[in-house]
Image (cartoon, rainbow, N blue to C red):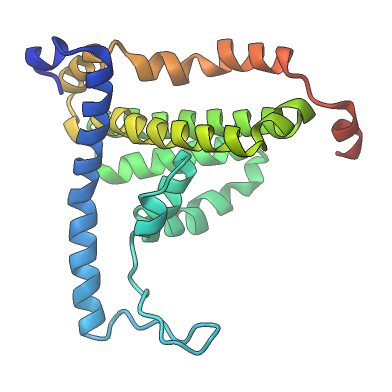
Length: 232
């Protein structure tokens, strides 16, 4: 990802390779989790009682939901399907206990900072979790803009448009998971900075400028419907 040969490739090819690299990097974690989960099931350690229909549940140590992971259309789906136990623990014992701060974004950022420190002190961990915060923040804002504007909601609810958007979002999550994962996997500043430069810092332009450029512009163009404001 940070080699001179990669820099010489075309932009589209680099984007797809970045996504492919990120996917295979995540598969290393998933493979370990699934092998461990299988062993725990065989030993009976993963037994988790009965389901709603009386079936036996063997998801006591489940750490990845493959169906959700392989069909993501937003980064929240990655969070819901990947490293489940750690995410559940941090949500229960860090995020919820910071409710007294009175700000969801501050609580989320503090939780991600805790996870970064938990992993170690390489700068790559902190950059990775910061981008996770920015991506989720941007996606929530986009959904809020669409849901609170009748014209946008109607447009995106059309069957043909919905299919195109779903394909676009599948590509978006596939490609930019590679971007977000580069600092975590490469760790050292000189390596992930070279990798960022190799793809023209596309993620920084896309996510970091949202609060100061794209977000305010879209909110000004697609204003909230007055009816929805009154209902709220």
